[in-house]
Amino acid sequence: MFSLLTKFPSFVFNRFGYQFASSSSSTFSHITSDGNITMVDIGEKKSTQRQAIVEATVKFPDSHTFQSYFNITTKKGDARLCSKLAGILAAKRTSDLIPLCHQLPLSHIDIEYEHKHEENEVLVRCICSTNYQTGVEMEAMVGATIAAVTIYDMCKALSKSIEIRNIRLVEKTGGKSSIHSK
Image (cartoon, rainbow, N blue to C red; front, side, top):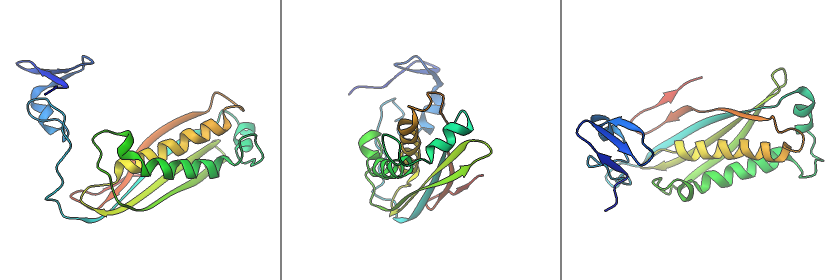
């Protein structure tokens, strides 16, 4: 079987040359003790209600570009509506994009926006929920990221200096651990 990692006495090197202490490789849930990748077996886990919220910031270079984002008559149409649909569709396709993610029966996906006019920023928030054996962090991460990237795509004719920043998990509930950060 192909091994992503090659073990050496005290270190593990992956094919990109990154170095990890061999004892830490066992803490990665998708890497076996002999260095192979694996999909985590969730068959024995209990289904519970789970939710994850991920945020991404879209930073516009100036107020003119930021205000143009609100203009629904741009050549490509409504940036917010397109972004919302792209984020929802992306969250639903996470297991197709990230090889070791499980397919989840998502019970809810939403993309919300907080417009920070003083900072010329849009905070994109993806909320995903399921009642399943594993969490929805990756679905929320993919949803928020693609929603933000879609805003960039819809507005890039206005400026190539638009930035996507601070993609981060802000809340995770259900399962073994919960996270609440702000």
